[in-house]
Image (cartoon, rainbow, N blue to C red; front, side):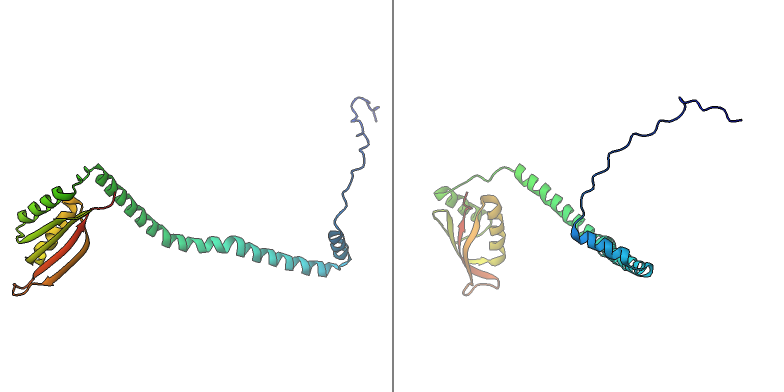
Length: 191
């Protein structure tokens, strides 16, 4: 019943492999392996359970807890960041609009003094003394409505680019309520 084996069908035996060269383990690892093999199975299970518990605790502290804590923090921060982003976009659009405006023509000396005096007259503020200074003008006014003065001052900032360097407003003697005597130094921004 047994047929002779065909030698061609047999798988040749693997050539004898050269023995693998093992690198020596560090002494601490060798001592640990000997101690592990010397433990009874019950102690091995107890040590394995402790190692597993420590691994789970480390996984919790390093992986799960930070991720779980990040969700509420992101839920608080994302709306705030989105509002800041919208505000930043609004400011960028405003800056673009301001860049598109023509520059305020620089005036200095007597030309600036004459323009400021005409502007005060046009606003109905009379009794003014306007003097030219190095980088702006000095204005003195007796008995002017404080409201009218502040309105003109806001317009002067836009029309001439003047900023208030120094200002003193006192209640005008014998004037109506809200009437002041003003002395102000108005200056051009330094380029």
